[in-house]
Length: 244
Image 1 (cartoon, rainbow, N blue to C red):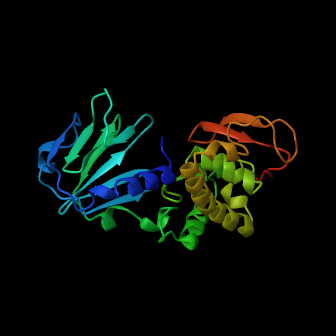
Image 2 (image 1 turned 180 degrees about the vertical axis):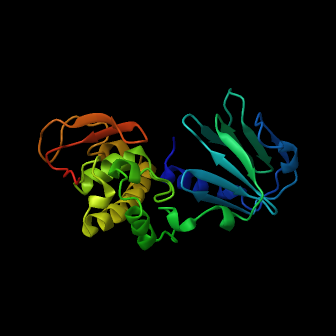
């Protein structure tokens, strides 16, 4: 599943179609009447976490790539498209994803202050949300899209390793300094991720995710399926402190 920075990269890559008219639309989406798209003009592209938003004059289309979704710009795959948009200067194709119509104003649907890639992200709000969930595990907190929209499993492993917090630590037991570090480093990692993804060097910078040896202590990482999210977790129980 693409994480927030990857959706930002997509948003930047499709700017050529902003202000352009959709001259043809097709696809196998069952949740969207695709016929309403032909003749519509793209007013903007936005992202909220892992959601890619195609803005039109009176509604928006939300694309969520789920686990196996993909896209093509000015090219196509042999697979059937969930959504195909044709313009006079190119085309967009989306595959194996969720596509739905949003008729409400996006400002009523999305809390932009929760999006870790958005200039409106609110550090204080994020800390307050963490404090309101004292029994939440640290490994679940980073994956909570209401707190850190756009963060995914790579974030979880890398951020917790950076700030030396054991993934099974209770949020309510974290000192205030650690809560602020958790928020700050989740946002910092988002922009590191974006930079490295654009350079095609992301995996080279992983310190914990999928790794076997801790680069600080040179002992074996633990690998476990943890938290309510049941995602792969890599951690060092020597340098990552357990707060319980």
